[in-house]
Length: 326
Image (tube, rainbow, N blue to C red; front, side):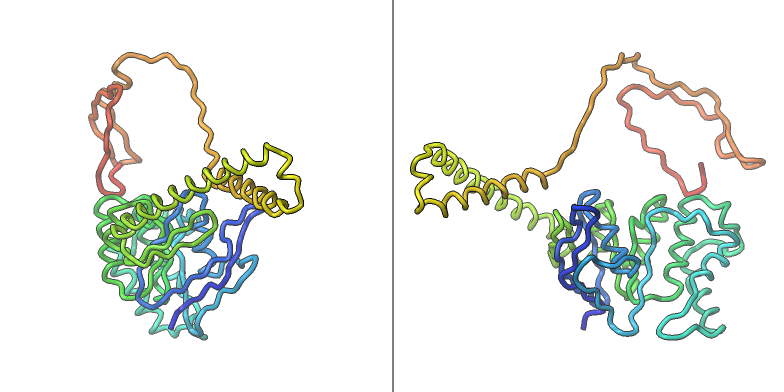
């Protein structure tokens, strides 16, 4: 039995439909990744599943007693107090009633144990990556049936990404997540759903299988578009002849041509409207930045001491280190 059903759900802003009559079922234990271009509606779908927004049309059916919780994409800045305080703030009513003190305490301790963060630390003093961990603890403290994660690896260092991968792989509940991290997708996701031009495609497979199926699908779509364009060109040549097209018996063919023109226009629109601008600028020499003996810190905490470097044009530099190291 599905924990949650979306049936013929439509949602848009203005005249643009982000979700256009989609259907989706979510079952217990699934680890689902939602893919799509930026602005395609991934985060909107997560909010809809979590009950934060209502669809313009269609229905969202949540099985009785099923709970959901969502980790937002950005780290919330309004939480205060210790790590324990922030995690405990996620405790609330579920399954029809409030938790008793013993149950609440047990869940708080269990969530904190997963974080590998000192519960006495002040949340406001943590790095963005450590805050991300704490907010995840707040999200899962109620032990929701469906966990929704929007870009869960944002702000995380390499060790923290490994930590959250391990947590999600061992978690036996249902997880939906949005990420651009391909390695994360490969390790965690067992089912891919994709939002493309308002339509939801359920690929029902892992990420590597999805890539193969998607490539074949795109080739088939390209061939369909090519055949369509050839037919449209023939019909445009015919209509320009004029006299035959005005005969009554050809009115159906003319109407079909009008529909083909509309379809072609829609296809051109949904292929994107990216605009790029370039500006002329004088190139400087090979060296862009030179730093000599830099030091930096907060109060008595020294983050950088005696750092020197030269950055040359064309360098591609990765900066690594644990969260909070600077």
